[in-house]
Amino acid sequence: MQPEQRQPAPIKVLVADDQQLVRAGFKLIIDGEHDMTVVGEAKDGLEAVDLSHKRAPDVVLLDIRMPGMDGLTAARKIIEATDSRILLLTTFDADEYVFEGLRAGASGFLLKDIPPEQLCRAVRNIAAGNALIDPAVTRRLILRFAAAARVTGETPEQLRELTAREIDVL
Image 1: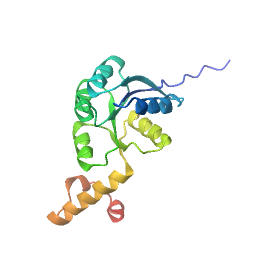
Image 2: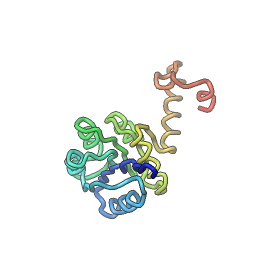
Image 3: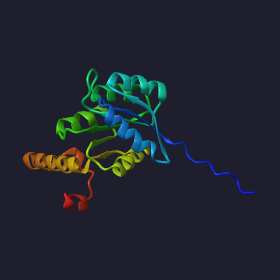
């Protein structure tokens, strides 16, 4: 008789977006994966904070722009009070959202036009403790840091940890 192998518990995901159709789409994608499950849906930041306390999700998919409490404020509150990790999603490709999201403690930032498989990979990465930023946004951030280094004549602190090869690529 072979010992029974236990499957790891599915990644618990909370979806927060003010548009019902978007929430339904994310739920359909996530629940279609064998290793993920949606444990709640929130229509605004306040509801996302409340459900994060009640359902203890591993990852919260959080829209940045929502009525009432926005996603950035909700992210701060969720991170302060829970062990949940935040993946910010937006249709607005604006650097200030990225910076504010990272300052708030979010683990990831993606634009909503990503393919479903990329969303699922992102959720898995965030749940595993990694961080990620949408590739289109990452390039702009790197260029911004590089431009700051040229202006000041010194390497920004964030870039000092790069290897010589990474700097060459940059």
